Amino acid sequence: MLELNKTIESQLSGLYPLPGKTGLDWYIFCSFVNEFSGNNLEIGVGHGGSALSMYAYSKKLTLVDAWKQNWHKENCQYFLQNAHFFDCDSKDFKSKEKFDVIHLDANKDYEGTINDLSLSESLDPKIIVVDDFLQSFWPNVTKATFDFVKNSKYKIIFIGNFQAILAKDTSSSTYREIIINFPVAITDDLAHLSYGDLPRYKILDRMIKKSHLNYPWHTTEEKIVKNV
Image: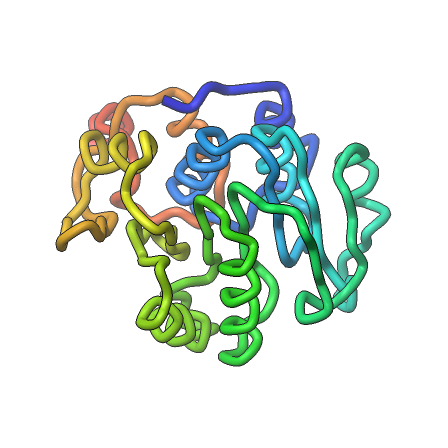
């Protein structure tokens, strides 16, 4: 089970930005980063909410963003002082390093997403997290991901609310925790988040309460009883 730390506490307390994820996706995302907590990479930083959560559980964090939208690099640098920033489009990013977890939250078009996935594959991570998967605003992210795995050693092992987890295999303690403790439907090695009671984790409950992107059935048994 994921342990709370000071960085995540600062997000839950409203001191720093939250990831643009549902509470469940946030918990699963942090759990994979925590398991593979070495050298990690995020492509598409934005306001820095997901980057901060990665930072909480990573030994080293690299961040790639061209900073062309309304967010500002300086704000992220304030609370991510030890991260390594690369100011460029993802298509121009090159690295000789190997990464453990790569989080993709940049391009939303088909070609850009395919390029980001191909780049990620070349860096040989244990886990690739694709944000905005099954998000109706950006259908090409989903299409590109499905097309990518057809010809890749990576496969989708878990589908959450709006994110997909890609890996070469399912030899992950976080994956096992999901299929044992969370409501999922499983086809071969692919686990889909489904309806049902969630595990009674305090950190998960707090993430669900704090996030503004939750579904009504994604709640704990205790909260359901209180609302009856």
